[in-house]
Structures are given as structure tokens and as C-alpha cells.
Image (tube, rainbow, N blue to C red; front, side, top):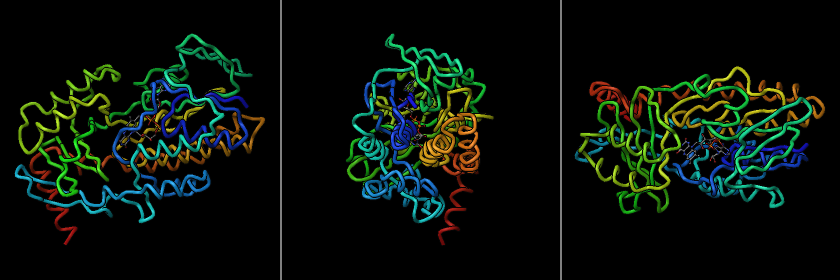
Length: 368
Ligand SMILES: Cc1cc2nc3c(=O)[nH]c(=O)nc-3n(C[C@H](O)[C@H](O)[C@H](O)COP(=O)(O)OP(=O)(O)OC[C@H]3O[C@@H](n4cnc5c(N)ncnc54)[C@H](O)[C@@H]3O)c2cc1C
């Protein structure tokens, strides 16, 4: 089949690799003019490790394994450690692989056959599914026809909006916003991962190899802003930490404001009763974002693309049955991943001073 994949993130690249291996003729379009490789390291967990092995990418993934979340220290304003988060509080099993997002995206890009078009600076602007195929008009003005369209364009998916309706119908905010920015390597002292809390706020420094990152998490009711407007994102981050001068918050905010690739978004989940309509199907965050607090978004992208491809192979002449099989196999992973996100916010950014003290006491007891 001729298949269009919208989005060149983890889900889109996995869909491309798997669908090509399944014998399909695939084209990928990515809205950005480059692969978006920034972000903090992500985890490959559980069943997605087997999927990575079947895709032939597990060895390079393991070769780039890091141990950033092995020890997270919560510190006070004087940088004294007040509690430590041990790896067994965040990992499923010792087999989990933590890898820089940039390395994973680069490995997946390398695994995509060079004959598969990956078109940058392009996105879908309109779709018409007539039952036998999908006519697509692109933002560049080009148009084409495909047998299937796979939306892998992230939490703010344009494919979902065009086919299923506006974002607010599916997006469930968890009450937090997060930001991640690059930091000069020298900012990270002795390889420590340090987090500082004020009620409802967390600012921290993490890193791996010679990289350092500033990370932020703050509680907030829903904010209406243009999620593509970087200046607005920087303003919201600065506003959230206004008046906070303790620890190294000034220094971290300065780095975030200077970063042209700052990652900023609401911490939200996507909830949909179904991930397919006609000849259009969604994978990854566009269909079932679990949020960064779950630590499982990348694993879901790997399993989702795999089940989708397997299902199309099992039912080559019946896309409805294929999509139903994909949803049946993938949904239990999604439910589990989404359920794990809620406690993460309370752990990382407790709402009150008492809750911060209680979290610290809990971690100190657990580590004895
Ligand atoms: C820059 C970036 C940094 C991230 N950092 C973290 C992190 O630190 N921690 C974490 O847990 N998760 C992070 N994530 C999310 C994480 O990558 C996903 O949860 C997970 O890997 C599933 O990926 P996905 O491909 O479904 O979505 P995404 O990773 O969001 O990828 C979607 C891709 O689609 C592209 N796209 C968007 N709209 C369109 C469009 N209209 N047409 C074509 N392409 C489009 C985007 O540019 C992006 O490349 C980050 C995502 C991005 C894009």
C-alpha cells in the first residue's frame, strides 16, 4: 500500500521503519525543517524492548544506554541534599533502557531506508477520504493520493484535528506545565541530578555524558496560548517562576530564555475512544499521549507502530479489521502507561510546603 506518515518523531520514524519492512511504499512528512532531537533522555520499557529487537535497533539503542535517572537528589536553597529518588521508584525492571532522545531519533533515522522519502518543512493541510483512498493536500501546495494516512504528529496532531475534531475534545490536562532547555555542561556539578522545589514548582539540573539540561515543572490551571509560539512559552515559564530567586532558578531561567529549541508544553494526556476513522489512523502521542510524567510515551510509540504494521499484514484487504486489531493489542499498554502519570507530578512538584516535607520524609524512610 502507499502510506503517508505525518510526523518524523519517534512514532513516525518507527511507523516508517516497520511499514517499509512490511512491504509498504511509505512517505514521511515532518513539519519542522530538521529532525527534532532535543528533549531529555527517554525510557524504553517492557514490551517495547522486544519490539526494538524485532525492528533490529536494540543493539544500537543499548550501546547508547545512559543512567541519568539513576539518582535524583532533591536539594534545599543551599544545595544541601534533603532526599534522594532511587531508580527502583521510577523504573519497571533492570532491563529498561534510558537513552538520550537525540540518540534514539538518530538511530531510528538511520534505520529508515534511504529510499524512503522523509520530507522536511511539509505537513498535511487537508484530507479527503473517499473510502478507496485518501487525497492529501500539503502546506507546500503539493497534493497526492495514498491508500492510508498515519498521523504520528504528536500531542497537538494536525491529522487528528482534521479527521477527528478539535484538540480540546481529546486533550486531558494533568495540571502541570514542563520545560526543558540546554544548559552549559559546566553548570552541572559532579555529575549530580539536582531538583529544587517551592510549593507547586520544580526547577532542576540533570544531564548525561557531557550534556546538561535545565528542567522545569510547575502546577497551573489550563493556559490558553499558541503552543507554537516560542516567545509566549518563554513568557509563561518566566511568569510561573516570577519572584522565585532561591537556589539556581535565575541561572536556569536565563538558559531557558536563551535556548532557541526550548521544549515547553502542558503535561497532558490524549484520550480517544478510537484511533482510526476510514483510512486514517493515529499512532504515538497523537492518539494516546501519556505525558512525560508517565515515562512511557516512547515505549507506546514503538509498540503502537509495531502492532499497526502487524495488523495490516494480518488483514491486508480489510483495513477496518486491521485497525481494530491494532487498537485491541495496543490499548492495554496505553491504559497502563496513562495510569502511571498522575503520581509523578506529586512526587516531583508537591503542591504545598507540607507536601514537599512529606515527600522528602517518605523518600528518606524508603532509602533506609
Ligand atoms: C522536541 C521534543 C522534545 C521532547 N522531549 C521530551 C522529554 O524531554 N521527555 C518526554 O517524556 N517526552 C518528550 N517528548 C515527547 C516524546 O518524544 C513522545 O512522548 C514520544 O516519543 C512519542 O513520540 P511521538 O512521535 O508520538 O510524538 P513527538 O515526539 O511529539 O513527535 C511528533 C513529531 O511530529 C512533528 N509534527 C508536529 N506537527 C506536525 C504536522 N502538522 N505535520 C508534520 N509533522 C508534525 C513534530 O515536529 C515531531 O517531530 C518530546 C517531543 C519533542 C517533539
